[in-house]
Length: 290
Image (tube, rainbow, N blue to C red):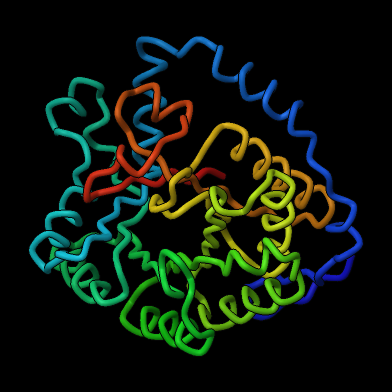
């Protein structure tokens, strides 16, 4: 299996024969999802440990039209201190440096986030959405320039959205080419590819899109923007994680998984339930896993 390396970025050749053979057994995936949801939640100190781990996997996000420097600054403070100090002391975790994994903003707010985190003497990464988020329906040249500007302003992670039309019409080569260009525009920044799974039509398309995104050099693949009618669901998570596993077995490349979720309870943080846009407030939460 041929691998091309560009600096620290690993790109796989597009394997159309693999993609053409994919067929997801929807009934089996749904049965597996039901089994997972029927499991009992962990309790007591194990629950606390998992919740603390969940906090460190969060991209704390604000993607609102009324974002200003002041609310980005508050977001960054919350990212540095996501849990009250009295609670951390009670758990004997007050000296462990628990923060969220990143803060995520629109490209125009990247400078605000970088400035706020620098003032707080905090090294939390700044992530930026790009490529015409959330729809991805802008010219390719514009989408690429948006990535470059966000990186220039200090973003070290870029959340791109794919052109769903390319998936729905089976244009896998065109999708691969676009994501490869996103990868190149990111430079040393991590590339997180949002599939918008609620708009891809089938679990088979989700698996294929996951493969193409990984072959094109994505560091993360993510379920959704949080703006679609249907976002992350258990079946979608299973399909994407199986794609990551299969890709690793074939190439040896580890790609990370990211899921758009709304934390309404402790069980949500641990078991990643489906949710709708109505669950979200101005600060959305994104969990990413190794």
